Length: 254
Image 1 (cartoon, helix red, strand yellow):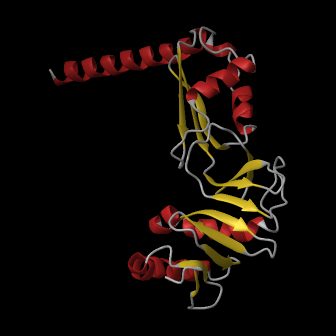
Image 2 (tube, one colour):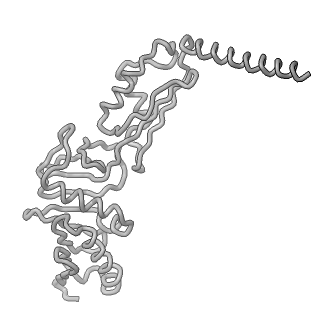
Image 3 (tube, one colour):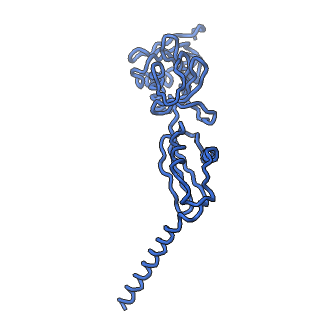
């Protein structure tokens, strides 16, 4: 009885294995029936959507749906993604039965730059310059003023953008600062100024040195001082000096 049971189990397992092998062998002969594209991003906006990816494939004349799996070359698809300026990494491209899976990670865009010629571009979390696109709808920090660097494919932040980038990175670490300081302006002395979303005062920030400490000092001034005295009381706040915030009153002298 035990022997018959063992034989039955063996036959069942063998049958399953044979069916699986036949399925694997026959898959390349089948046609691709569907496409699943999965982008990953740390931004709220998905700057390269599955629909965008399908359009890229169509424009590159890469046919997938309805084509035999063995005739589909995955390398051009990978190259297409790798050449896209917004793609950080191609995670995988492979078939699951008759479905093609495309999975990729997008670069995290953290800064929107307007240079002194009025040109726009983005900066990602690693300091790479990315071309401007209206598809990016996130409410990003804006950098403008005496910025001479222009977008160039493959370029990274240089010179005057380095302190702005470093300061914006510190701002992004704190929810209060992210909501309060949305614009970074480089003045003619190459000093960074912050423009507050509340009030009409200017904040002289200087460079990126001790940026975290400066922002913490500003945070205390806003929460413990200006929230009680009024945000229109001062025309300028200067945080360039260690553990000090120098305030200049408005002409009204409130």
